[in-house]
Every structure is written in structure tokens, then in C-alpha cells.
Image (tube, rainbow, N blue to C red):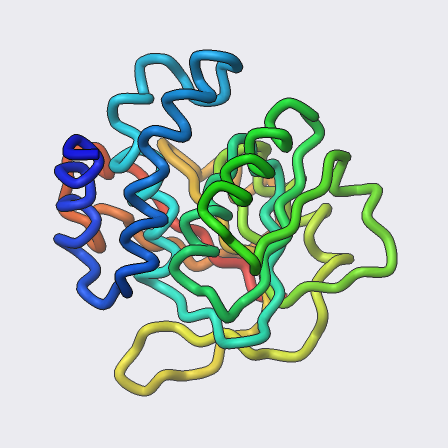
Length: 222
């Protein structure tokens, strides 16, 4: 628990408005993911000791740049062990998150973590996102699971047209629903091939940690 508390200092360095319940949920992630990683290699072995920087805080860069309003529905495409969906569901308890992955054992971990920390605003699905029918979401999020071209092709049919998300700007201007994905490296060719014109934000400008250099948030409106 002391180790998790120390790790949490990295999160609270950038976010100051967590409730005690949210802090407890975030603290619990350290032991939960360490235990599950011993059974299933859900997070890279070399990354498990950097869980709060490389997974939790990285996921929360979306919360630093965008505001999800109460009642919004967000789909996490290719969530793996629950990123960015689980940290975002902790951060936004009044929004609803649906986490999808084609690998059953990873969804099993998501379900176990959800139940352990009492995330009542999170559902999950084992399957391919292309197979989802008769459901619409306000925003799709994803973390480096596929090229932007594919992510946009998968998300676009699942997005409803109304706009209820907002960006953190002084004017709090409404944002169109769309896709927000976390990417790294040189993205010029990938963006060109996608046919999209995403807004690109540097994560390092949000969180001044060395790990986040050349890490980006891409926002593609519907």
C-alpha cells in the first residue's frame, strides 16, 4: 500500500480534485495489476513497476485535455487490461464506459479489477469492435492498438452525432463527438494514410515527464 501511495504522488502532481473514493480506487490498481500480471501477462513485465506513469497517467492525459460530461457513453477500443478505460472511469464516475477487447483473458482482468474497486459505471465485452451492433457512443478512445485509419473505420459507425463532450479551454467550447487515441512516434505517414485530419496534442505539454516525449493525443471529430 505504501508503494501505491508513493506512485499516486505522480498522479496527484497533475490532478488535485480526487475524492477519497477515487484515491482508494487508484491506489488499489498497483496490487491488483501486479497480482494479475503474475497469472496473465496483461502488462509488459518491464512496465509493471511503472504502472502509474506508463499506464494510469498516460490514460489520464485524455482527462487533462477533454471533459466527459455526466451521462456520456465512451467506448474503449482494444482496451487490453483496461487502459485507458479504467483510469478514465475512475476519473469520470458519472460517465459510462464500455471496454472492448478480442482477447478473453484481458477482459477477465478488466472485470476482476472493476469488481474489486467497485466501478459501477464500467461494462466490458469480449469480441471485435466491428461486431458491435445497435449501440451508439459519444466518444471512442483507444491506445495504440491499430493504425488511425482502422480505428476511425471501426469507431465512426458507433458514434452518435450529437455533441456533449467539452475541451478544457477557458471558453469551454463544445467538441463534436469523435475518436480520441493515444499514439507515439512519427505519425505523419499514418495520419496521411488515414485520410483524417486529427488535432494532434503533445502529452508532454500536459505532463512534463520524460516518458511522454513523442507521445501524442489525436482527436478526430465526427
